[in-house]
Every structure is written in structure tokens, then in C-alpha cells.
Image (cartoon, rainbow, N blue to C red; front, side, top):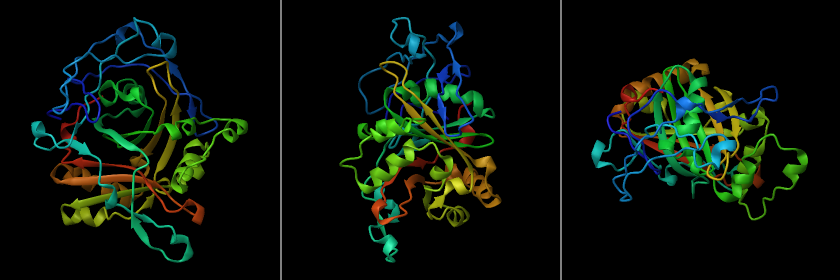
Length: 340
């Protein structure tokens, strides 16, 4: 894309095609184990970042810590930061190829008496996660790009805060949404805990929606997760064909696509933990694939596209729902996205 910089975080400069290193420890499937890839000498790169138009702190060199054994050393390996989308509004790109956080009231979700036959939906009062940024990259090898994003994503700032990542895997690339996890929910990010460890976690003072989200995050059961994760996509304005396919109706996305969940622990003092939800678009139904194909074709001409997530409340004790988070894309052109 013609001018990419930091979103809510700081950005990087030109794109590079070679990065290494990330440690994936726990996946939701019990028969899978993570791999540890150490940074080699070839990954010692410096990349000057560009300041956000609203940030007067000046440019700086980005340093992304490597594995835990090197995180506290002064000679920690450095990787080249990936370019990341601007945050809207952005005069430099004329408000194109950028992102913002969707107004929460755009989403209608289940109210407190929904399970009692009321069926009333209410505007979301808040987001449980705050949006950190959004990226769009071109790639045909998602396995290799995984370590790339974990080390240098979000302009090199990904590991500075506990983050939940939703990653849409297309045959041609990936759309990534980054959300900051509040401190009260960070202990629930860890997957693969024993029953004793889970019993020690406290949900005292949580709202019903926060309790549902906490149970969902800490679960290692992909079927449980897929049965509750809902995606809501909205096109506020655009061609009829797109609005007809993207209606704003919540969808249990795990029932339509192959979804996997991964936990990446923290790696030293400045590397926070991450949980990833991968949504494989290529595995979807014919209707889903058609919707993605049409949306990609018209994406750059759409004023806005909203993509949000919510954990479904199935009982009175899990209501009212609250949106996990959402990102609005502003005229993002996939044909101009950088390659990784």
C-alpha cells in the first residue's frame, strides 16, 4: 500500500521479506505441539520507523526481543518491523488504506432478557478489548508468515502489550486485527492449564459478558470455542451486491470455517503473551467464499467495512452480551498490500 505506518502504535518503513523467530507453545488441538525457532545471525536488522501524524515523539529504531534467553541481553537480536496500516483519519493517505475502531453502538447484540422470549437486541455498550491496529498482507504461505507476524507485526510493537489476534487467512493473503487484552483478563489467555490452575483464577467483579469471555479464552476445547464465537460484519454504505452479502447478521464463524486457536507465552520483560484465532477462509462454504471474493473486489471502493466479534450468550447468566472488539476498514486496497 502506498503509505503505511503505525496504527495505534508506532510504524515501520519499507517492507522486507525475511524475518525469523517465534515460539508457539500451546494449540487448542491436543495432538499438536508448538515449535521453537531461534533467531539466527541473519535476522539482525534495524529499520527506522515513521511517526504517526498525531505523534510528535519523532522517529526511533525499533527493537523486537527474540526468544526468552536473549530478551534481557543488551545485544538482543533485532528484526525489521513490518509496515502497518495508518489509523483513521489520515490526511497523508486521504483517509484510504487505514483503520479505526467501529462505534460500538453499530452492533446489535443479545439483551438481558433475550433467553426469556423477549428476543430483543440492544446496541453494544462497550468493547471488552480495545483495538490496537489492523494489517493486510499478501502471502501464499501462512505457516512461514506466522513467525513473521509474531516478531515484527504491528510495526514491530506487537509484543509490547498482551494481545488477542484475529487473523483471516485468504488464499492470497491475510487480514489481521490486533486487540489489547485488559489486565483482568490476561490470566485467562493461557491455554493448556491444569484444572488446579484454572480453579485458582478469579472472576470476582466481572460482568456476565466478561465471565463468558474468560471461560472462552482459557478453554482448550475448539468445539466449545467454535460454538460461541460470533462474527458480525457490516457494510454501512456501498454497492448493493456487497450489502446484500454482508448483512450484519451474527454468524457462528466456527460452524462455517476451519478455526484454530494458538497461545504464545511472553518472552522476557518486554514481550507480552498473545492468543491467536486463525479463520481459514479457503475452507468456507460456497456462499462465504463468494462473499469474500465480492468484498475483496469492491473493498477499496467501500467507505467503511466493520468486522467485529462477540461471545454468544446462551443462558441468562451470560447476558447481556458485550462486543469483544471491532475494526473498521477504510477503503483498503488489497492489490497494494505488501508481501510477507
